[in-house]
Structure formats: C-alpha cells, structure tokens
Image (cartoon, helix red, strand yellow):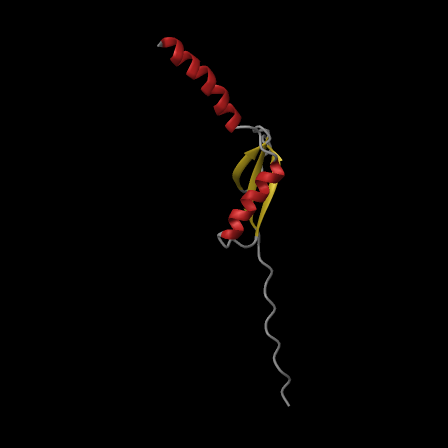
Length: 89
C-alpha cells in the first residue's frame, strides 16, 4: 500500500508543476486586458516590468516563470471638449 501512495505522489508532483508553467508575458497581458475590457474598465495601462523593479501601480500578474510582473495603472482621461455654442445672430 505504501508503494502505491509513493507512486501516486511521485506522479502527482510533476503534474502540479506543469500546471504552473511559465506563461509568456504578452499572452497573460492580453488575457488581463480582455477581462478588464469585459468589466467595462476604461483608461488604464498594463506594463510588463522586471520582478525586482519598483513601479507605481498594482501588480496584477507575474509571467515568464516569475521573472517579470504585470502592473496595472489607471490613466487620466482626456477632458472632453465642451459642445460648441451655435453662433448667435
């Protein structure tokens, strides 16, 4: 019985590490952007930076085996131009 448990554990560990494989940053960034757009989020930026670099914003993911991170930042929206008044006679 111990042999079966050991064998199951040995086969299970590689399966778990495969599930946590390094995902390409651009792929993860596009997945995050798709989710944000689906939720109606406007005026944001996603930036890929090295893991050890300090930047402003919220880290929303890591990629390439944890060597890089994806940072989310809200951006200012451009002020809307006021409606032009019609010329008064």
